[in-house]
Image 1 (cartoon, rainbow, N blue to C red):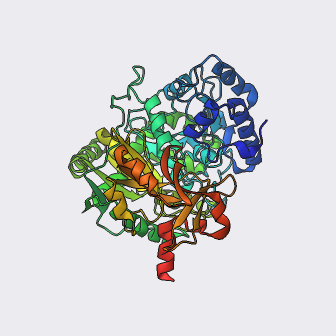
Image 2 (cartoon, rainbow, N blue to C red):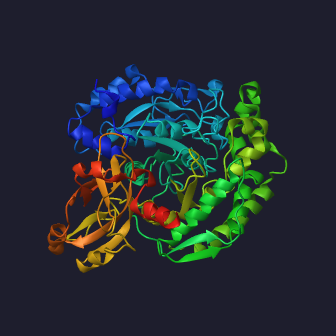
Image 3 (cartoon, rainbow, N blue to C red):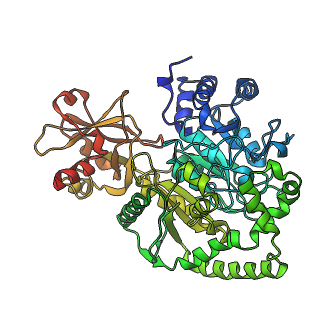
Length: 590
């Protein structure tokens, strides 16, 4: 087996496909390495049914008869939340007494396997998908991928941490109140929650069947979009399935932000508040119109999820089991579920709540037409000890900015933003109307600087150019980009295998050098330039700079500025600043 150093970091669909096609790596080697990583992380309580070679081998053997070039997920390993069926493997919903062995996989799992993906096993979750903290499981509290004393988020805790720790290229979760978004935020991942019914829920243990969604955790937008293309589509066996067209990323007409001050909580509340302020400033730099809207509508909808009759829907599905097996259900889970049996939840109250939600949906549809609402994914986080001491309040706080989503029939994508502090990620969520999912992908790609295949294709007779120094916006040579017909496309980030140097030139300029050791991701910009002038532009670049191939964080490759390696011995390494713009700001403020 190849050394671990040959494995891509992080595991992504695009990078694994490239290595498979170039015969640099085999799916068998990937699975062996994953099993090794899972054993190393055993005390993190990520898996309920962990990857085992004897169970995975049939899926590996099957790959030999499949065309690796035509199947988009050939050999790609993925994890499955243990409330989603995988044929022949127990589904527990984190309750051993509830367990059953399905003969058939959930529809979404079947579609992924048909596309060549390898199901690894089943991941831990808050019992019966009731919780946003990741601590409500008899299989142990799932530890945060970055800071183990903190919560991982729930209920899809194991799925998120499996991806973050390199156990899978992507993972399936579910989302009723925020379970596909909160764990993404707390583990620095992308979490996509499609519109209700866009992905079938056949083969999923219901939490609240009318609201449940299957979701995906990934390292980048492109992987999330790739999974969406494969699993999206109606299922004639699923009464909750609905038709939605394929996602086509595009820019929204405006960004909506709450006009009311937001509240933050937990031991890192000030870091979260500062990260949100920085996030809003980054959104302003996208140069899209921003409208400040009344957030009270969304807050009211959020309160109805657990204070209204929808909790009775959970009880309708699970009440008989809970009553018969009280001693086998987590006490806090039993308390939440049994609240659905309250006599306050009458038929009249259910209709009153439904009518109120319909009224709010009507207003929201007008507010968010062609627009994207942006909120913190969560207003803070907790230590696992804090959650143990106060399980209800801490959990409720985690859903403050997520609970409204499915009730209002919105789609959502959670993405990383500024960290609250070292190894404490802060995430934001973008919401759109169900029929306008492309807007959240379009805005997220602009915010993250990730060029999506569906979104940013060069026009005919043009090429992308990655620039990382004086040719960026606001720097002295920006005018050259315009003189050669260049147009700014978006901010972007390299793959994590580059070093950035301040060259000994006058004026000072940066040099980007690719490396096999101690690399990092560097911020840059993507421009689009006519091919007719690209040759002359390239010829004008002085040594030691040149135009080569720059790899982006999502695996895409574009022409861009690179530097010859010999100059590194004469230059100052400024990689730690993450980009030339950040370095210059530091110099300006020092």
